[in-house]
Amino acid sequence: MDTYYNPADLKKFGNIGEFQPEFAEKFFSYYGAVFAEGALTAREKSLIALAVAHAVQCPYCIDAYTSDTLEKGCTEPEMMEAVHVAAAIRGGATLVHGVQMMNKVKDLSM
Image (cartoon, rainbow, N blue to C red; front, side, top):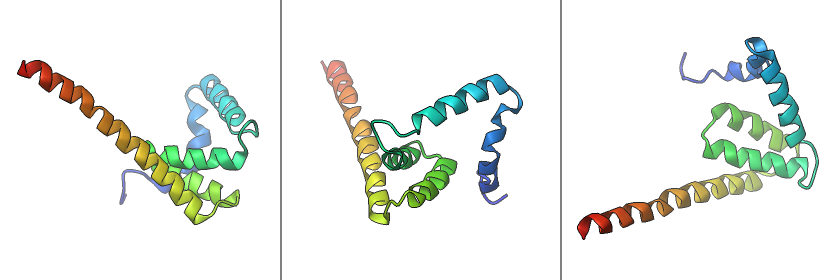
């Protein structure tokens, strides 16, 4: 295996219920409901999913939602902008935790 993540495993996602079918059934029911058209379009939800996939660094999700966003008519610039939004939020979240460090340094310095 060349990577820790085998791209072929994405096709096995539906098999997650093999050991506990009742939980998988509930998850897939919820998942389907979340991605159904609602206040947000399926296209908008797919772009959000693509951005989140990058933020949580899930190669399977990146693969799946890259295909899904393309199928839903998203353009390459829209997809990359969604990735940049995720990067900005992730970077900002890291930096804002620097305030915690700064507070601790100030407490210890007194």
